[in-house]
Amino acid sequence: MTETLMLKVTQERVDDPSTGETIDLLVTPRSGRGAGARVRNVLLAIWLPIALLIIWWFASATSTSPFFPPLSRIVEEFWAQWIVGDAKLQLASSLRNLAFGYLGGGLIGIVFGTLLWRFPPMRRVSNPVVYFLYVLPAPALLPAMIALFGIGELRQIALISFGAIWPTLLNTLDGMRGIGQVKFDTARAMKLSPARQLFSLVLPGAAPQMAAGLRASLQTAIILMVVTEMVAAKQGIGYFILQAQTVFAITTMWTGILALAIIGTVLNYVFVGVERLVLRWYYRSRALSNS
Image (tube, rainbow, N blue to C red; front, top):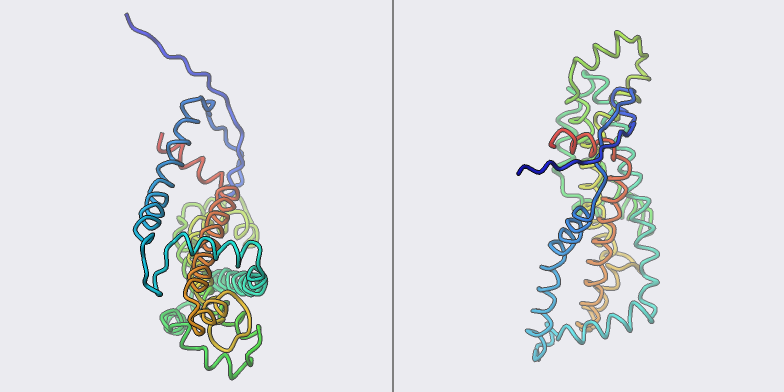
């Protein structure tokens, strides 16, 4: 006996920003099996960090080294410093500088990447300069930034912005250059203006690679946030970690490192969530093509 499995298929209308057209997608409703798959994916994602924390907890339980205190003591100090204590006030300065520097660098990267794509002669002339600045380690510019901007927050924001520019710029340029010529021919046949082509074709078509560049810029910005706070600064999580090490408060220093790891992880998950929300049309079309 042959059983036929009938799936209820619904039709969903989705706007494709790369063409400006509305397309119909055939969508199958998510069942309990889909929910079970999501649970399994979450468990697969978290089991290794949990296992490592358990191993760290028991392996360090009898530690007497002043440099590697037991994890239980680090957790207790973390609660005292970052949950009920005043150490969490250090985050305000760090996150403010990170936000201004990252957003400024990302915006500059997108704008200049678009200009370099739009004007090939400018791209050919500026290529050596762009790649020279890209490979230049941003922390090496700290003395120059201090000389230019002093020891205030402007120096920190400027260095974070500098480091965040290049991954976004290069990915924006590569994404735009990767758009097929057929799409431009179609846009010209439809008599779309250059501005309309940019916003309806080029930017949506390059959006996935631009998002990859922005994510790489976020990692760079977090690193530079800490580096700038460890030199000529009076507040911030990097300053907190360095001061704790200076006075040999090693357990307190570890709580700062743990707080920084948590912040970086949360920011990355937030970025991924926003990316999937903004580019949901792209992920839907990719899933449909792979099905």
